[in-house]
Amino acid sequence: MRHWLMKSEPDEYSIEDLERDGRSAWFGVRNYQARNFMRDEMRIGDLAFFYHSSCPAPGIAGICQIASAAMPDATQFDRSSDYFDAKATPAAPIWYCVEVAFVRRFPLIALASLRASPALASLRILQRGNRLSITPVTEPEWQTIERQWMSGESRR
DNA sequence: GCCAACGTTGGC
DNA sequence: GCCAACGTTGGC
Picture 1 (tube, protein in one colour):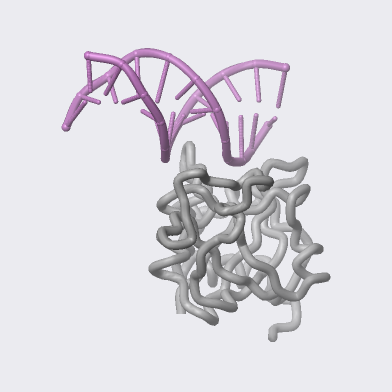
Picture 2 (spheres, rainbow, N blue to C red):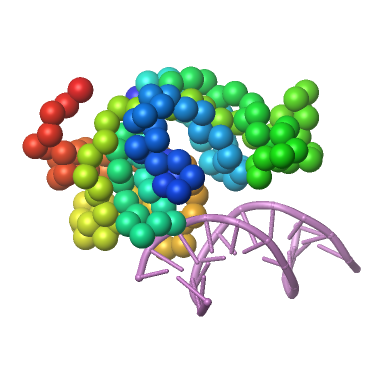
């Protein structure tokens, strides 16, 4: 199983929204690298940190699970959507999304706290200038975060 | 609001 | 294929 980190602006869609919905399509990704991760490398059952970005308190807000294979992102065909792409057609889609399911929510692990951990120096989102909205998380990085911030909590 | 860093576009 | 210009991201 692989691990991931997926960014969302909480104003758009937060971990609280996913907890309420239970499950949601991760639409709106318009970056080829991030798309390729979803389309080519994610597997049902993979776990991902749900990261809140571009907000007053950026950080990891919870965990979700990949719940479907990649499918064409319907918003690329929708003229009224911010994510509309005139170059995409149903016969030749450009953008894909997966569905994610809520796993858990916990007190925010602030970006500053992640930065303060030497064991997380390699974490992709901490690299200078990183902007990818979906990034892989290595097994050691995942375990470091679990051990450091979730050891006292119940596991599923 | 600022600004560094990045990805994409498009002229050549 | 190069690269300047532009738009976007995202922390602060």
